[in-house]
Image (cartoon, rainbow, N blue to C red; front, side, top):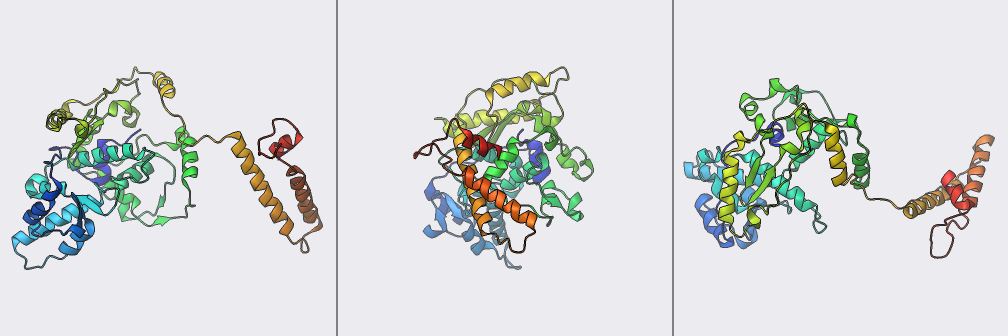
Length: 392
């Protein structure tokens, strides 16, 4: 499963059809003149970080536009707002408080800005962010996490909130359904618990087609582009390009899944020595996106795909817990239980409960006598103590 173009349109209401979001590369020193030209103000050195503008500077400098402001000032404030908007939502950075100034020229002409495929660019940006987040050296993630979270809520019954039924129940875009005040309490979970939940998923916990009954609330201009969810194409966001491969997740579209064709290795636009040539190639592929719709085949057997997939994938996201680690955790838990049993006051207990507590103390005390076989703390391989702990 993965996030596809149609889900971007449904959840965010952004255009997934249109011109690719490609911008000219700017030198860091170009941030000042481009801001002066399009925003009417120069950011100081404390207001920017290289080619990135601080969101706080945009908010402090342009949040108020006088009612009697001239058209030029209104346009400048509008550009600042749009730059702030994309920088804090669909193109959020790992820092969380900056936006690349390279987006600013895209808002110079408002009519042209409205013709860009912003949704496709947002998905390309998120695809790249998800890939980067798998690196051991990276502890944060960027991109449109609202889209990622809502996608998870729609498809997976893990941490999914229960919503109050209200006006937003029929609102569009669909991400608004998860914006309401949540009803019911959800226990706090850590990453280990979420990994266990993912690894324990059953077919009944997965919604392959969660949007099938929402036609009435989806605008026609969005409906007309949903077919692009099945377009095998190249998504572009500035100097980044990512492959959109719905042929690898056809079950999301109600089709049986065949073994997909191989994906040729490529470096993306920013990984190529000749970026202008790579951009042109990616844009050409995007221009054919309506002609590259993948179809399903009812004759396909899912079982062949599942066998193939099980041999190439990592089946579990959780880390394997060794027997020794589980044994140590068991010993630690039993030790805490024994300490608690010793502190219990039995004066107000019924006789049967007093005996039960005494029996628990005796069993724990006996089981915890030298649970490890030597001073190095190695697991015993034989013997009654290990068997007794496992039985308990």
